[in-house]
Amino acid sequence: KNEVEQSPQNLTAQEGEFITINCSYSVGISALHWLQQHPGGGIVSLFMLSSGKKKHGRLIATINIQEKHSSLHITASHPRDSAVYICAVVRDSNYQLIWGAGTKLIIKP
Amino acid sequence: EAGVAQSPRYKIIEKRQSVAFWCNPISGHATLYWYQQILGQGPKLLIQFQNNGVVDDSQLPKDRFSAERLKGVDSTLKIQPAKLEDSAVYLCASSRNGGEKTGGIYEQYFGPGTRLTVT
Image (cartoon, rainbow over all chains, first blue to last red):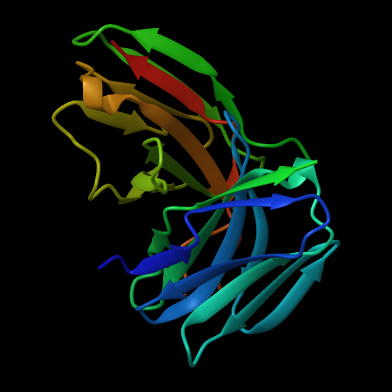
């Protein structure tokens, strides 16, 4: 079993829909990253969380340390949000970054 | 501030050939990372440098891969000889600090990546 699991693997939605991407992990962590990767492009860090909730524009990230779960929400989704969203956690025992496989999001106009 | 620079952006080589990638991190960032991302998977850390010293190279296939960061600034990653399974995107990232207990964890900034195709 992977130490970081994301769901869904693929998500297709219509423009304007509210999007939720989930990340569950099985190790103790000191922080969790949400990152965005466009086709053929590099990776952009969206959020780094260690507790609670962060908001940036239409993006909201939450984390529940007790349940070892984080969610990334996109409000009023737009085709330019189409990308792969990756969850990565920082293992607290050795500060190693453990990556999820990513969620491929497609927003149709 | 300028971002992480990588070159080339794309490279196509035949198996058994050699290839080198270059990365220039954000100015002042002490930690530099090289990742390999195979299509459909998350990135895998190949090597992490703190200044010009290696912090972690446990997943670097040392029989064919090598990396250096001689002056503690830019870095090169080399594959010699390449295999078909080396086809991937090679990402470079940098951070102000990394792997340190005090002060928490700093965000990594990623370059655009180099897409390598081995035929």
